[in-house]
Amino acid sequence: MHPPERALRWAGPSLLALGAAGAALLLLENRDGGEILTRWALVGPLGFERLLPLAGLGLALSFLARPSFLVSLALFAAGALAGWEGQAVFLALMAPVPHAAEHLFLTGPIAAVGAGLLLLLPRRLGAAVAPGFSALAGFLHMVAMRLTDPTLHDPRVAPIGFCAALWALLAVSLTARAFHPRWLQIGSRIIGSWLLAIGLLYGAASIAPRRVLPVAPPTPPPIAAPPGPNPLAGPAADELFPRAPARAMPFGEGASP
Image 1 (cartoon, helix red, strand yellow):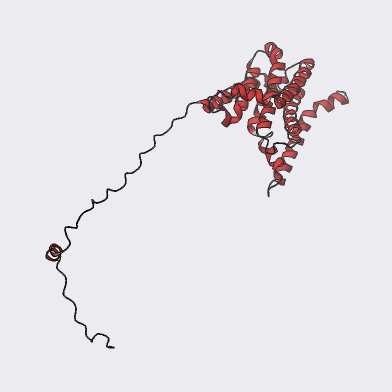
Image 2: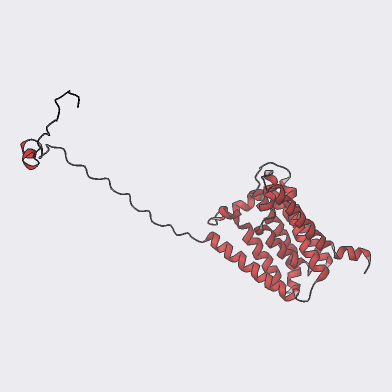
């Protein structure tokens, strides 16, 4: 094996190791509370909902020939740019979906379903639609990055979000392309079915109508007694409740014991 090929073979595992080391450093930095952008990096671009579809897409791209692989990466970048700039269009299209705004407008479930379908399709058909799915994945990822941006105007958010997505995509795809174990053909379809099921279940649970429990009626206030004379006042009260006789004082009034 030539040195360039050997270096390319270990590019994927090296990216995985670098990413794991970077995530560990971010965790250590945020142990006592760090910058808001570093905290967002752990739960935003490196969150489970973001990384899982990207790992599935990277696995699907590992089966492509090199020209199709490079075209898919280029379209992923183009889709990411379109998602960052065209977020408002996507939000307008997804606005009628019930409860979509509570789940980042279903960017995670749609990306998971797309990656799962790409892994389940026949290889020739998957190679034909992989560039389109790559563009869609980049678009959805950057829409989610803009929706979760905690700073609103920090210019570092877009590069961090895109680099995290590209890292996940390349780390999985290059590792799978370099080693490509025999079980990967069947294993990729199993992973695709999992991604498809996760995306469908999560998406359906997000938009399902919610049962609203009935509110108990308020407790009525106590009924006040009607105004009028007290029937137990006067001589009638003395007859029903006679007063006890006064107790004799052992000393005279005002005298000391």
